Image (cartoon, rainbow, N blue to C red; front, side, top):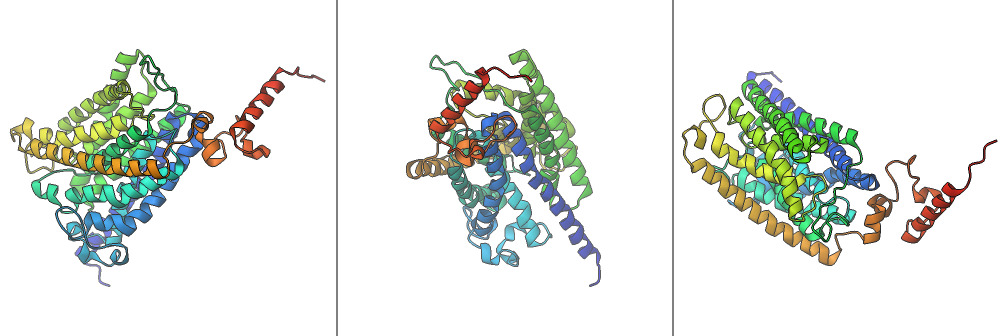
Length: 455
């Protein structure tokens, strides 16, 4: 086969798309470490298991149904072609993806890792009290139905894209959809036992592993250089460099403003807030990253860091228990980043061909962005409420109070994360029941009271 310039471009574009998709896949590790680090040791295995299995579930659901609904040819509301049997060789079924020349398998894989990210957002928000099986079932609903339908409106040639709605890499499509679905889950689950006192007091539940949290945050920061620049789906040097620059500037600004806001409110710079500040900036810049200047990226990130921290305290005042701050990072800043395009888009110093409100473009872009935010939010909230409601009625979604207090690691998985610190009851030949766990605790107390014999 003769290597023409056109064929060489296809090869280079494909390598770029696949490499960035691998980076986004690696973000699963980042989410697992952040979420488990921010939660308690007794639930660590459960959170790691959810983050590990969620991508496998997302892969099958998105391959079988979701990709066709999202990108298949159809109506302004839904895709109707290109389901599982015709995916690999069925490029004619996906006219919405004709703008990139990479093979269909590369297009699918890149979009798959984004769908998996949306599902992972839900995992952290409902942590420490959800049934493992119910979370997996909801993941199927999200990645096969809710995410693809709303995504079709924006990236699949649907009505919002025709209106002019702009979401370059997913502030709304990935982060807000995941955030809205997570919010519905929290409302149906209720708060963790002991999180809120009867007098309205918010009881802080300390994270158990700062190292895990920090490493996870850095992995996610790295992964975003696949998330945003990879959405070019082409080895376009100018576009990649610009998007990487705006992505990093927003993350850096949000890290610092998040730290300062936390420092001001809590009197100490809280590590969890610092990491979530970074993630908030990354989420916010995801929609407008191609269309804003370096200065615009700094402004967007700076605002994101502040509102992420303020949102954490606001959700607690509403008694909406989000163990990892997923709503503050992904939902609140997914909305902010989407609207920020209508404010900061500029033809000067970016890839944009239009100007937003702050650059003399008027309110039209901002209005369109607001319509998209409201439409997607309404759809996912209604769909998510139905899904969570049915699950709650049919299978139950919350573990028992006893299991929640003992930890989901023992009840759901029969294991503990740190065996040297706390031997798993199952390893000692005991059934994992409240009675046996209580007996084990009494035995340990008795042993602690016995005198130590020294030879």
